[in-house]
Length: 481
Image (cartoon, rainbow, N blue to C red):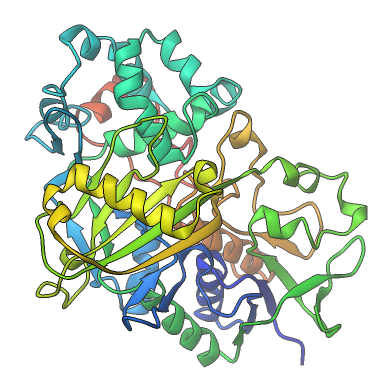
């Protein structure tokens, strides 16, 4: 008998979709081209140290409702190390800035800790007033209007001072959109700004175990328990059918019938799209989804030294690394160990011609800038992971190009962080997209279900202002997306 649903891609989106369908009695087969599950949130064991390492460090936050619901379903939600008070340490000069919540309503709670930032004046801070209003009142109706404008131009149009743009916004664009400010869509940046600024006590978390250890085995077990299967080293070469998708073709020529969910990133999906589809949206736009590459560095030292659990450098044209993580303060059971640090080189074209050793040496220098005691520690091991695509670049026009889960080809549903979830491209977006895809599959079978969780209404002063201004309470136009 044919399987109910065929899911291409064993990352977060594909596995979330598979578990949601399995929980409702559908048999699914998940096909992952690589040797391990997890996609861009994969983990593996380092052969020298035996430690589990991720493809690169990832962040959770307290408004990741879909991701956290997925982990609760799998029994692993407790395996996140939360940082509830301090939001982020910035290695600014001559003194660091520690962003933390004050007992003020959103969006004011971070303002007191940001005001002493070195190099900025009160006029620079006041120049954010018009932008603050845009962040407070942002919702999805603004996206089409803002998506064709660069974030840099939008900030200038709102009167933000050049010092504030250079000090804060060039850094913010790089670390939250993975793209330089001048290339980033204003809609993409403002959406993230609104989501991070308007919830009371929003805080970050990090996997206390390897990322894939949170979900890969557990999701596989759930899918298999419902009669399905999960396969690795199983690349899909194409689709069966013409005007309607009737199944998939594996790289070895095997044909399998069933409805199909593609949970592939756009760079992979375009390699299996048949020529007849390439004139249709969204397939004709797949080339426009430009990858933002990463280089992720892991450093093992011979001793402990003082370093923030989570900190970042500010923007500099010549800098390699931005965010750094002390895994000794994150991973369960690592507190007594020597320090292990990992970092991200974001939008990493500037590092592509460097050797792994050159990258490690540069990363050590940049680590010492934020953690001077690291200069006295001896590096005993290092790994460099080159990631061709962390997320698609949210360039101008990106948000309006993101496709709906329902594809124009019957029998095919799309999932992945890049589809239109009304969220930035994150683990949360990936899981939400998987739930949205599962909803479409179930609806076709007359099994209506509400699985994806919409962003909740904003808190505090933001909620009040939006109510008075007649703006929807949350960032989305409706309770569903």
